[in-house]
Length: 285
Image (cartoon, rainbow, N blue to C red; front, side, top):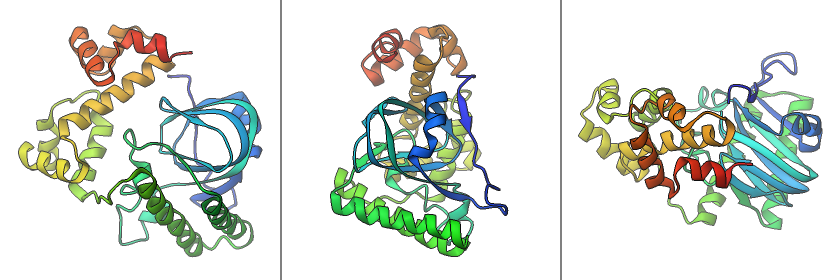
């Protein structure tokens, strides 16, 4: 895990700071061969035109094929297992590129496909949907190369994300759900503290509301309890450690704040159906 390649956003690639970029997937061939397993510090949407193999996003195996769309959020572990180098378009951006300028500061967080740890990270588009999205992405590329007009780029990106959210929800049969400020605050606190604080009381105190009220808000907006969100985040990190490190089960349990390794093993098995060792043996390379 400590040696995992981490790609940072090149904010000054075009001179002045620009927090959005679009590249052709085939231009990343060198990097995919050098570091097929890596993570990004920014949001990424990849549309495949052609290629073959598997793209793994935090354990989700996705086929690399025409009109396949991949979504990744910051720090998700990605791995390309390719039999044919893919071609396509990749748009990526920092959250602040949109949210610092729109009234809806939670826009990106409320996108169904960017729900880190819970969203299915891929979507197969129809021919018509693929062509429509390709056209919008090429508009972004043209604007970046020709004018770099930030407001126009935000508008096109907003259109891309809002349209994709609608398509994604329809495909997976999801209902529109909006996350409020306190639920977002809770999720961000969990992301920072999950390995040291497993108690709902800790997060409620940080947000200055009662555990019962926090749980009520979170369950209404996300469909699961605060405790389950904490557990899911711990299990996600445990999966990453099991797959991408050689640490022992007891070391992983300790790193995740469990004083009792046996309890960690029981909890992991309850969520995944496998013991940590079985998961490593079955899912690992």
